[in-house]
Length: 159
Image (cartoon, rainbow, N blue to C red; front, side, top):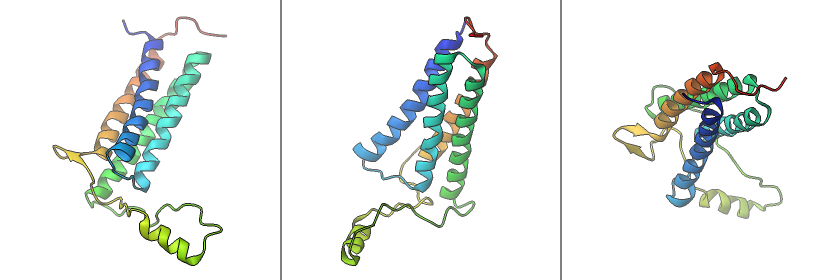
């Protein structure tokens, strides 16, 4: 029988592993993320936070927060997948860093040295599955498991 606590631990670890996996692609394998890649990371942080809260306070509400967070990152993954496949347009803006105090020449050098990462290009895929596809599939699966965990009666509910 699946225990609620074990599922929460697994789901919290899943979101943390997804973030670490993104960092591996970014910092070790050299795939700089686009704007939508960053957007897919934020709900994983949220889901992990809800998992920690659920473990600490044993409240079912936090499990639904984890489910919503996982579904949000899955939805962003679907959106990003559509942008990659040119089914619809992606964001027209890009992220930037703090440029206060830079001269025009320094700013120009920084812009020219920064890698241009487009949301509509696929930097990596395996058997036709991109990172955005993989995030969407796994995250929607995690959302279902969060809901399943919420349906399991807690063993020691705090009043």
